[in-house]
Length: 471
Picture (cartoon, one colour):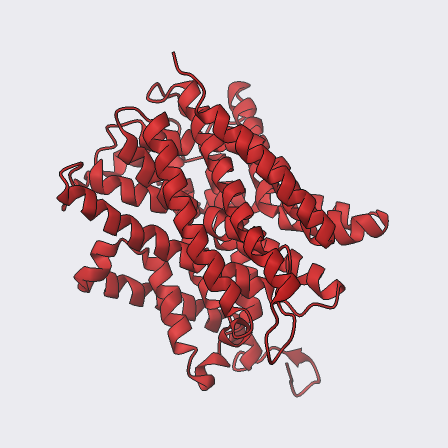
């Protein structure tokens, strides 16, 4: 602010605070472009299938090794972007028009959702089997106790859910540890697991794919066919015409933001309630940590309302354009990956590098063998296609699973792609109690041990269900 001659406050557009937020946005954009150049020009990176957004985030991490540049990156801003981008991406996905499909039967879809949740559980079990003993007996010579007993549960959040949920639960666990006098950097721990998960899914997935290809067990399509589309392919019946005074993308983004505003109102309302000590310490952090879940819920409700208005003739245009909603979700998840990776602090990892390394290695090994074992059983005739799609998703995101699948099934001729999409519904239903357990665990060591016991029991039940007799 500056004062004019008559004493009126006027904004100075040269002031640093005017550009502070945009500078962080510039950094994310430049990182994406740099990652895209590297992936396009370096064949090894292209063949590794490492996402462009992850390369961009890793570039920022490497540059942060220089102290002068490290001061430019606003860690708080990157964490905030990761948090909101997660919800916006899921809202965009939930607003997409529903499609009828006959490519995947109900049983296989339920089995795929069960495999997703069972993998989350085994990842959490392995994580706790590392972090609980380390909490009890391991000490950092310089810093003392710096690992939180329930932090192993961040493995399924980082590997299975990605940077957004790793950040949300990392924050919950960091606050829970601080309340107990434990100096645990949960945010950096969770985001690091998510970043390593992307590398595991891409690099390990490609290496194993080439091994199978050399053994003649499957065929890699070096140049996966890319279909060419025209503008008409992206248009829907009663779409907003291009001649309108407002762009179609503007309307789509506005609907997504309106939906997120409803999420904000709900979380703010719950946050204003007096729920006692349990509510303040447990319920309210979970409410804000589940912003993506409320986003899915309100996205589905908004879609139902719009469909109702269309049926009654009160709304003549089709505003939920699937292509544009896919683009909004794609941008959200790409930005989430870049910002989530950029938010990692090397300084904070100094005290937790050993437990981080152990849980990531064991988590990767167990995920690989468990998903392969189950996939070859529940996907008769396309076991490897099912494995690569699920392994990519359960170490990165759904897009990583689709990228791996396209290498061996470029036209998505097997039901693997549809299984990956449709499993979200049963997975959400079965997974919500598991998420509640993950919110209960950091209350105390006993709560964590109870969670470990429940997860182990549920994992056995889920695995037995997957291997039940088939007609």
